[in-house]
Structure formats: C-alpha cells, structure tokens
Length: 246
Image (cartoon, rainbow, N blue to C red; front, side, top):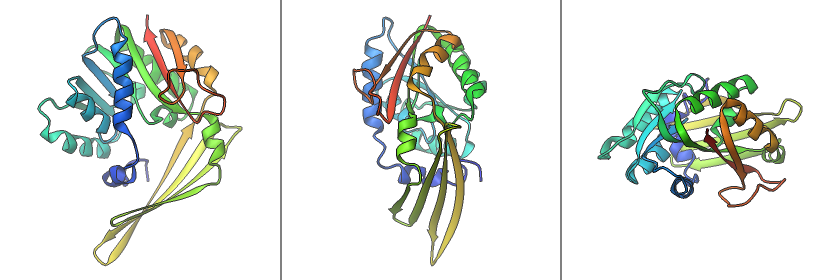
C-alpha cells in the first residue's frame, strides 16, 4: 500500500507526540527576523494540516500542499471551524505549482527525507525557490544519518483506543536509505482490520544541504540543532535548515 493511504485516518492519533506548537513557535521566531513581514506561508507536505492550521490561527495566510489526497481530506476536515482556513492543494513537491509567490515556506517532520533520491530532492528545492519571493525564507527540518543508524533494526509499538501499530525500521548505510515497515491493526466492533504500509526515507550528510540549496537558487543557508540557535552537533538526529532566496 502506498505511504499515507490507509494510514491517513489514524495518522493524528499515532502522531499525538508530535509537538507542532513548538515547531510553529520556532517558525515564528525565524519569521520575526525577516526584513520584510511574513504574511503568506506555504506549508509543504502539510499532511493532515496540523501545522497549517496552527499558523492560520496565528494570523498567517497559509497554503498547504501535499501529494496524498487521503491526508488532505483530514486536513480539510480539521480546518472547517477556522475563520481563515488554509488553502489546501493536492500537489507533489517535485512539481509544485502555485498561483504566485509566498513570503516563506516551511516543511516539517522530515518530509524532505521522503523524496526517493537526489534528483527528486533537487526538483523539489528548485520548485520551492521558484515560488518564494526575493528574500523569502525556506525553513525545514530533516533527519540525519545518525538518527537512522541509531534505530536500525528497532521496533516500536503504539497503542491507542482501538489502534495497535507496530513500526519496524531498517537502515542501509551504503544507500543512505531507511525502510519503515508499518503494520496497523484497527478495531472494528469485535474484529480487527490489518493495514500494512512501507515508507522509505533518504538521508543526507549535514554538509550536503548548503551546496544543494545554493544550486537551487538560495544564497544564504544556515543549519541549526533541533530548534536550537546553534550549529548542529555531529551526533544530532534532527537538524533545522534556514535558506533564503536571493
């Protein structure tokens, strides 16, 4: 089954630990340092719209883009009560096509790691740069090879009301590729229904991000520790990247 197809209705329950508020706080601190005010924000790979809706509640105009119709259906339902809901678009980040430019773009929870190879990553970075206004900020987080190496062969279990999820991860250091096998059991009355998905993530060394972003058209690139105002440490499992368009 394709990633985030069967999993979409249960994603928020399984990701209850995700701290979207802290991510939004960090983004706002970065926005506040911009020379020009940030009003219109692209949430790339927005998933079920948790971050999109948080930013909309804080007064930003938000465009959320994601390649999964199932995840976007959940995002649309989540935004129903907002006075200024995000505009959600079903688009792959490699072929992003907006109606105009945005002041800033964000991409949360290692979504760029899900692009299958370097060619796909370059395509996505180029499309984001194209639709950023001059001087605009692209803010994202990615998982590092250290993170995937640390969880190689690991299995985790998540239990929620009516849900039982087993998540197993393998790491291929030569290919820089992680494979996640996810088995989800959903209680439906007296029976349990089983869903299986496989997710793959590609990792890159921290030093690769600056040349890749500069090639895409960004002129100022800075990497940070996980929501920290410092350079990432070698053993850091997640890094944040800020890149500005010329």
